[in-house]
Length: 288
Image 1 (cartoon, rainbow, N blue to C red):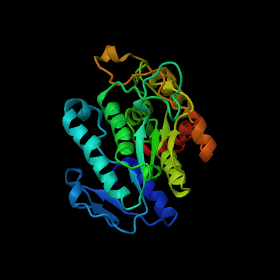
Image 2 (spheres, rainbow, N blue to C red):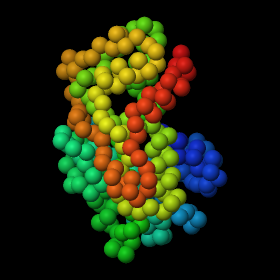
Image 3 (cartoon, rainbow, N blue to C red):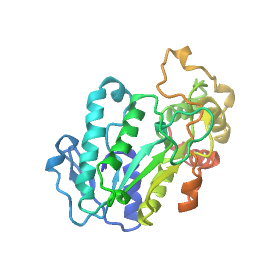
């Protein structure tokens, strides 16, 4: 569900590689093969394919700005229509895997575990939290085991901003200005897709976390990135968001997730920063 999302692109690649039959949904008219039309505004018109056994819900309103500017619309799609679709799927005995976010937690002391209480601080996070709770509420106790939650920290790839622009500028010997008050625990889209694939295909059920091993401020990451790529780290000029008159909706110092329970059940481990840096090192020449 949400086949046009960047994460879905990586999931589809893994399905194809492993000869897994799939369908992906899209609201576009010109969708590709193996895609079916789904408009979240018209859940009642969506016909569930009887061959489907599992559903991974990636779609919804995920843009932070849109959630701030048009809360009612984002709430309608995320907290009403997605649960309605889930109900439609679950009565057909389809296992549900809802992709959620680390931002349902606000924490500056420790990485939250899989079953810590939510305390979201901005609209997107509040809506994700509300949707998680609604997914459990709509199902009977008998069917509750069919719903799983997978929370992820920030996914990146070569073209994720501002990292793409940083590399482009550093290669041109230009200064970059990363925020020193913005934090993340990065994972790669490919990491997440692989983790989701394992959880789904091995029939794990419950609430799972997938996270970078530790948090880095953007300026810390920029220094590490420049050095790992053999570029001039002296061009990294840290600034605060207030210096640029930017109001950050989410700038917790701890954005990482505790994966102890997930690791015990699935064997999945947090992503070390060297995995991220090595990926950029192997691919940055593609940036012209």
